Image 1 (cartoon, rainbow, N blue to C red):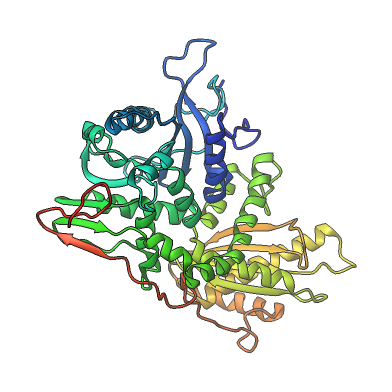
Image 2 (image 1 turned 180 degrees about the horizontal axis):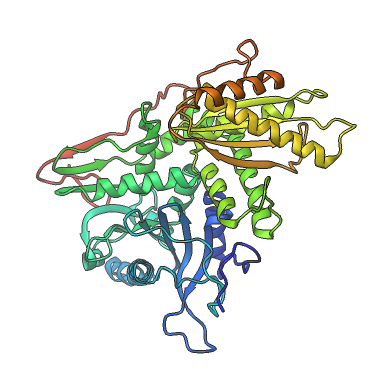
Amino acid sequence: MPTNSFENLPSSSGSTESERYLTILAKKAFLTLWSYPNVYTDEGRKENGDGKELCDLLVVFGNDIILFSDKVCKFTSHKDINVAWGRWYRHAIEKSAKQLSGAESWIKRFPEKIFLDKKCQVQFPIKLPEIPERRIHLVAVTKGSYEPAERHWGGGSSGSLFIKTALVGKEHYDSPFQIGWPLPNKRLVHIFDELTLNVVLNELDTISDFVSYLTKKEDQFTTPNMDFLIPGEEELIALYLRHFDFKSEEHYLPKPPEAGLVVLKEGDWKQLQKSKEYRARWEENKISYLWDTLIEFQIDHILSGSASGIWGESTAAMNERIMRMMAEETRLFRRALGESIHRVNSINQPNKRFTRTLLSASREGRAYIFMTVPRPKEMSQEEYLEWRRGDLMLHAHGCKLKFEKVTEVIGISFAPGQEIMNSIDYFLITFGQEPFAPEVAEEIKQHLSVAVMWRPSTTKMKALRPIPFPHKITVLESISFWFKSKIFWLRKMLLNIP
């Protein structure tokens, strides 16, 4: 009988070198619990036979499903570049797009028939989102075109695939190294080559950041009566990173006019990489990876079956939910989360509890509490854990008392001064929209007073404003030209205008 559990899952990192590399990048960005290479269906499977591979990598996170196809195809030269390109395109891109379309169709029809093993005995461990909320993204990773494209364009141009949304289906055969809509129904497939795969998964290396970019790109590209000419996905990434809405606290793509053509120039990505602001951004991000480490620490316990409940029985679904909520945070907000972990861990004074509370920047009504409590010498480990967990729960109620709009609190506690994290408590407590009843609030205040928590004299309030680039961007904004009729595009070997 097929099994469905996070424990003792079959191990897979991809069946080819390219798939293994994709899996490494994906698990770094999307984390282990939600990234599954080489999943299968039981389509056409006989009694003792193997199932059919659904896709090379499946990511399921909340309401988002990302299907990856990975293909490495040698680009065979020919005196006619259209012939060489057409052959490569059919094998690398057209085939990938059809596979992804088929995988999407299967998921829509048989969401319960996805397995982690060829024999279809281990069911996919995460319940797929229901149809009304479900969002499916198709991503084709294609390798083999970068160097031929670089030679074809010449003049120092990048070898990344050119985005030209005027192309549909077989129109690609006569348009070397240019990609529009591989599927004739114009279902968008995101296509990343050797360069742009690294760019997108390194620059947008959280599930929220990555999905937000895909969604906004999909919205733009499906705008009626609108076409795009972009000299490589990296140029679109550069445009996206440079635009940040401080009100919604997220990156965005500038809204185009109602109809026309959007053209981006080449070179903005390289210019952005060379800027001081870009280097400073990476320095600021370093602390944020402590948050990723904290999540993966608990995921290891979930997968090994060693994750236990603080109070009562712990279920796989509950563990996954808490980790998913933590992984929802963007790289930008993870800076504050990582700095909080570092701060509470660094303060280690005998018999002195230290706490820090953060209100989520992206999830309204969510708060995080970090607490370290040194273990008194006279206290047993069991007594210490019970004491630490009780303090964490009381502080969470104090948080709701302080911030009435808080509806969910994720609490994290551990002993301070650890070089390698161990014995970490995670819990989730949800509150209603309404404040505590007066008698309940009064009782909590009394407990807080005894425990010396949330005292006005010792509670410091600090507002954090997320800034993607630590300093004001001085590089020139990406130049976009908007045309409503004729297409003018300058690129060597594509069009020469005297």
